[in-house]
Image 1 (cartoon, each protein chain N blue to C red):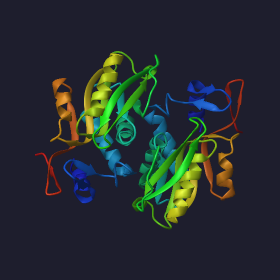
Image 2: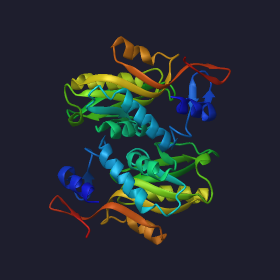
Image 3: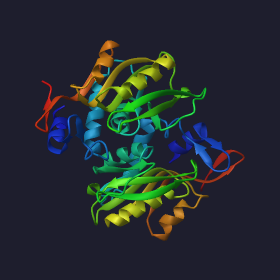
Image 4: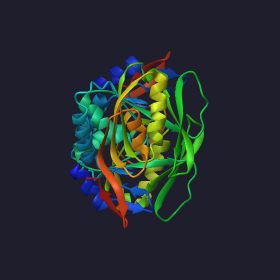
Length: 190
Length: 190
């Protein structure tokens, strides 16, 4: 998505080996016009997949998820992050390790918001090491739901997250796909 | 907003003296069609106020905020919640006490996303005791920004949050205004 790539080039900041900071339009300040365009593109890509529900993780997945969901006319469920959680019969829980923050969090979804055989589209801001996707798949598996695709705003394709989806045969659509950071600059995949 | 009131009546659950749970369309599962209608109504209400930016708090304020912002064509900045925070020169920080969770969190906004004299609209999911609004005002005051209004999806008018805005002469628009909980039922203000 050219409009997104241009914003990443103009405003993204590469930190160290593998961090891309895009807090001016995605992770702290949000550009709703760009997010709406992203939501429309996600909806277009999965228009024929009979999606029942979008599942994301708080916080930065919510904006692209709700715009895509508004286009598709389906609800969004966002997994909540908790530092500590008491397992109950009412919740699905999975562990998610954050390489950026070097800590394990739990993500949690109330069982009443996921149903067996529902056709789920996962949406998130970043796909990097795939920890969030892994946690979401653990939860959707526990619910017996059917993940038919994943859409991410930015994929760092040099990290292994995409392999988790490939191994499961889940279609991945990345609106911007970064193959490398070279001399502090973003290189997009062809 | 009748559409919102009807959803609160159909799906909201009153817990104890002062909690309203609306996790089927606002706080865990999100109905994007309803959120888009809410965003449009907020934009309509503040259409003539020359809003420069919407400020909200993660997580549940983000969906109504981004839809309102898309209509108004302005960015959203969401304050991040942190259990513990090291003050730096780069951030505005305020304390927010949660009566529901009985804990104090910090909210934080990067200084580069708030500018002096900017015309700010605050958006949030709930207005109850006003702790979040108070924290956001502390931050916008520190930035020298000008809060010209506040829009909340649901106001519990029997709690004191609205007084904080009244005392400062800040216009408040509540899309659903609850005057009371009576026998476990929601009573809307006339």
